Length: 255
Image (cartoon, rainbow, N blue to C red):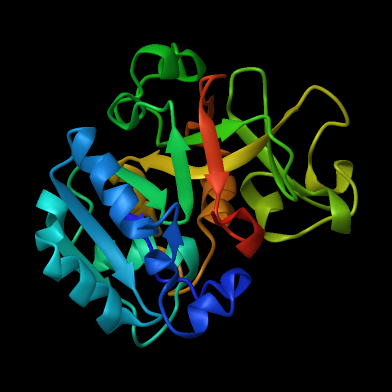
């Protein structure tokens, strides 16, 4: 599933006239770049959520015959549902949920990552999930500098979230719902956690997707993961050191 419904406010004024997914990076629209990457990795089907300039994005993909993939659109014209709500809406619409789903933000550009291998939690990506069986979700992370961080234990299990500039912490389980000013208030230990930047790529099991049924229309997928991580395996999986991951969220990163 490609999350492409966002307003792309950080890419204004370009997104005043086009969806974020059609903004070019190195001369190629972000959605085209990602669709080709998915096809090369062996994926055959893509679900894309649409909201901002939805018609423009749908027409572009149809004009390219889906770049060789079977494409379904998850229509969010009525309401922008955030990352978790977007996944839930696709599930409730019957578009996903029968098998694990690779979720990929449209404005993330990568190289050096085997998306199929990550999807299967296989090989080099399996270290963080060893001995735990198939995780409810696997979140691709790395050590780059970010404004917000996921906090994980030595086993890779998601334990919390941090927004350093604002001094906000969240823990897992019941502590996920209430932002706190200190780690202890969020149910987090002062030491022993690893800080990672989330790469905007994750694999979620059909069982975990089913847990979204009772959630509201609009919510962050990180809040969902923090909540279910208290009882289910939600693993932070480090990207290979040689991987290049670019979050095309600002005009200065376009080239």
